[in-house]
Length: 253
Image 1 (cartoon, rainbow, N blue to C red):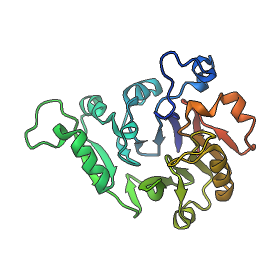
Image 2: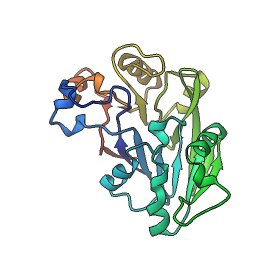
Image 3: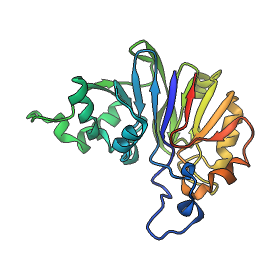
């Protein structure tokens, strides 16, 4: 299995015109983070988790020539806004894209992209096959996927475990039941927004504590605000088995 980080950033704390902070001015490409998303290549499927506003550019940049499925964590715009950009895959690959989401997330997609779901269709609409998921495991092709409920403040959202790889973003708390499902994972991806307290995201220190509790062989932090600081500087504060992810990072399992 090959995992490519399409984006490791967040809309919260996103650089603005004239900001002038050290991250905004950095020449290090690892400090240039698009909205959070990851591409997973299994033996028979090409899967993306979340399609945020940067989806089109991320897919072009990573050279994603095939797409079978998108798994959604939750309905916030920085995770779903790019759904319309599956059209080229429909057209070139001549297939529908499987969408996996909870009922609540599906309702949000139907509001945001009502033309996709309208009774009257027109040529060129995104073509999808909608699959309802909850906390029960499911398969995409030959690949078993285990949803993991985590809490984004008071909003229950999903992380995913795929084999020895576990991906969690936008979490603030993780229940013992979900931690049990993560147990034994070799690679953990976990959100680490910033050092200052935040109501709905793990902070840097909270993410380190959670990573140590899970005890994966390797943990990568994602959903990083530019408020966290420079990649090179922050990396020096981390244990050897925890790293900041960056756009374009590839790992293989």
